[in-house]
Amino acid sequence: MSTIGIIVVVVIVVVAVSILAGAVWFAWDSDKRIRAFAHSTDLIPGKASRAPKSWTTATSPEALLHRRVRYAIADVHQNPAIPHDPATLAERDRLDDAVFTLDDSLIAVQDLAGGEKDERLEELETAVKRLEELPRQLWEAPFEQQRSDIDDVIAAIART
Image (cartoon, rainbow, N blue to C red; front, side, top):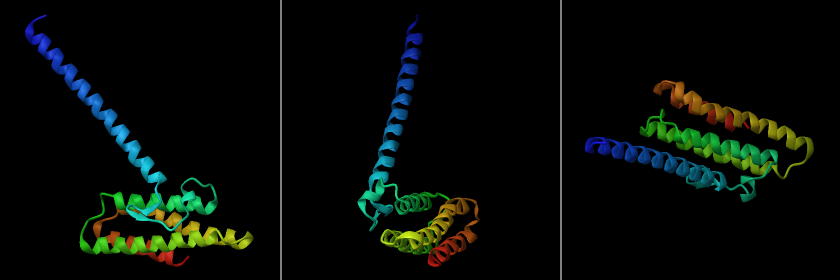
């Protein structure tokens, strides 16, 4: 094999190993971040919840709703379709406050019993479902409509 042939093979091998190493690093880093968030007590990225630490793995209905809220609001925060203008960011901050109120309601539900607890959980699940729809709505909505979509979710949470 000629010198040029050897150089080409070496370059291809180096590029292939670099791509493989990058893919492995990406998978490892993504898994690490996902696990860190799953085991954290953050309700909103960077802001800890007042919910019990055990809710990160508990299977009670209120703990499951709490985790659904965490993932839904994380999707809102990570949504690249949301403009970073001051008005929209202020609206998202209001949403964050509403999400803490919703989470506090979930925490309060754990002390209820029987039918009252079931009714309250149904009401709160309606608000959680509405919050879960928000990231898709924000992705599809024009910028002018995004703030009103966030307002609608805040209002739905306030009704619970």
